[in-house]
Amino acid sequence: MHLDSFDLPALSTRLGAALKARGWKLVTAESCTGGWIAQAVTAVAGSSDWFDRGYVTYSNAAKRDELAVSEATLQAFGAVSEQVTAELARGALQRSGCDIAVAVSGIAGPSGGTPQKPVGTVCFAWAARNGAAPITQTHRLGGDRAAIRERAVIVALQGVLQLAELAS
Image (cartoon, rainbow, N blue to C red; front, side):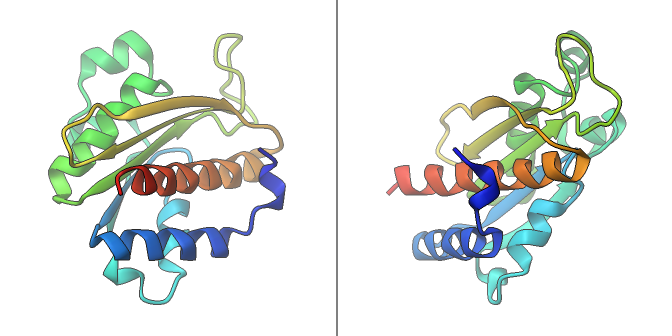
């Protein structure tokens, strides 16, 4: 997957068409992307037909308070983990009443990385209101802070699109 060649507006437009065709609403739960996923989808005219809301839960307290991520999960796995993003996605679905959610947490740098979780480590979760467990992935994204964040937005939107297409 070559992320530099992706056209973010085209991807957002395609996603919007897929969600609108299903009558689904999207909710986002963002940490390292800081609302960029919500910005990308709301740049599409008519996105109010398929985008409901976004949560930016940058701190651990925000993750707990806004989306019910458990302190035990944060302590056991850290904020940048598939376990936390799964809880973020489930919490976003529960709090919003939306049909599909994406959650992202990562280390965009330039500092903050560890040998186990270097800069560029980004965890994702996608969940639909069908009762299935969230789909989770961890990616190692390259580049500077801006590139890592932009690539995370692309991966996040691609995952929502794939989940929506699988559900049809």
